[in-house]
Each structure stands twice: as structure tokens, then as C-alpha cells.
Length: 118
Image (cartoon, rainbow, N blue to C red; front, top):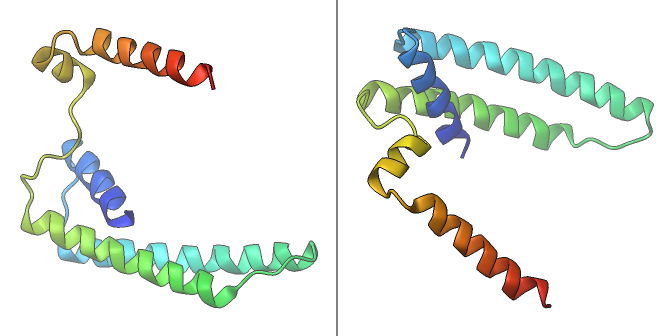
């Protein structure tokens, strides 16, 4: 999921004119990694002060995974820059299915009737 979220951020930035290269993704990864590890340390100190436990090993493993996922998302973007960036807007959905909003309203009302009786 973090790869998909990262790809969404990248595509959004690309639509605003940001250009990306392999080097930029390596820089993003390194920057994220350093800042995230600093936050893990901060949260560890907060936990200690409050008498709580924090599994540093699992937190740092998660940071490493997210850092790698930045590169994965970046490589995917560079290999397939023309992928559809986002889900369609509601205007596009309504254009394709003009009565979608009334269909959704009816479905919600039916669900409310069915489940409010429980």
C-alpha cells in the first residue's frame, strides 16, 4: 500500500511540473530514511519518559521497508510514466453514469432500512 500511496504523491507532483530522475528518488529515499530514524528515536525517548515500551527493531524495519518502497514507486513511475494517475473525479463518474448519485442514495437508504432494524 505504501508503494501505491507514494506513486500517487509522485504523480501529483508530476502533474504540477516536478520532474523526476533515478537520482531524485535516491535522494528522497535517503532524506526520508534519515528523518524517519530520527523520529523513531524521538518516539523511543517519549515512550521511555511515559513508561511505555517501543519495539525499536520493528520500527526501524518498517522505516527500511518504506524507504525501499520509495525507490520501488519511483522506478515504477519512470518505467510507466503514462499510467492513469488517479481515480476519476465525481464529474467524470457522473458523466459516464448520469444517475449514479441517485443510485448511491437509494443503496444507502436500503442499507439503512435493512440494518437499522437489527
